[in-house]
Length: 338
Ligand code: KG4
Ligand code: ZN
Image (tube, rainbow, N blue to C red; front, side, top):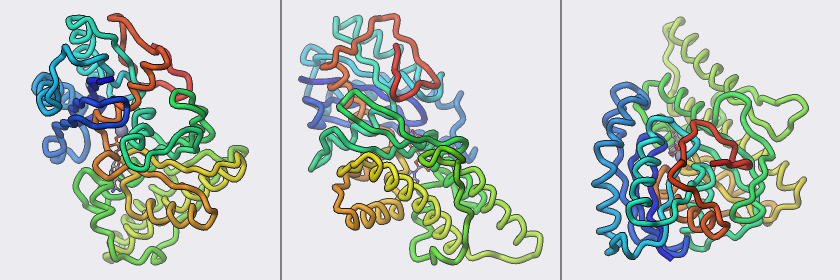
């Protein structure tokens, strides 16, 4: 079965053709990173405009690269939530029109579910049930994935997402957007024990996260050093901050896995590309004898192949929408409606 998938939730216009939820026949991404760089972050209005300009060419390229035509496609899957609303609407409206014109089923896909599904495109691929840590620019979730379309949120952030904290720390350290990626690159070889950060706890919710205090701690360190005319070793600061964020993510994952008796841990989302998090999670899983899965690096960030992978399973579960499909800026991963 061939799924044509479309993703436009943030700053990548992407389309892919995926076979049976597993085999990537094509995966085209038009990135807007260079355009948003001068602003230090994504400008939603610019993102929507660029999506509208490039979506047609991106979808055509995905079909061409897959050596496919619309007549060979079985359904159209599209990211419809959560994300930047203007950006999502471009993909959703394009997918609706295409599905309607070609007489194909339209499958709405939740963005975070698709990040988890990026793992199904890798070898070896995990099979539910498993425990997933979903870490992106806007979300930090610990989720039990009971089957391909049944999710239960066990813990989530009360304020900043892990990616947001890394991005803001990177920006304060003078690194260009995308912050998390550059922080990872520039902190290699730094001393992760040079700086200490508070370990936030959420009272009564041991699996919930809070990263805003840690982010403020980095900003204060930089500000206070600036006031005293001192310069901090940014490599050490970056290494220490990433180590602290990764430690919290791993501790909560360990707590959830031990409570739930999980043997399989799955990483997902843009931050799952982080080298420090991957190394710490590998060590944690090795210590406990758990199986760890993480997407191949090119599939960690936003792409449409992962939408095709999740779209396949949503379609099999009968999650098909009509031309009335809307886009939503927010939507829980465990209670999707469309
Ligand atoms: O999943 P994603 O591509 O987009 C959202 O759905 O938000 O995640 C983007 C986030 C950004 O915060 C970005 O800085 C972070 O993923 N990121 C990284 C790395 N690569 C991307 N964070 C840390 N280390 C990386 N190597
Ligand atoms: Zn994402």
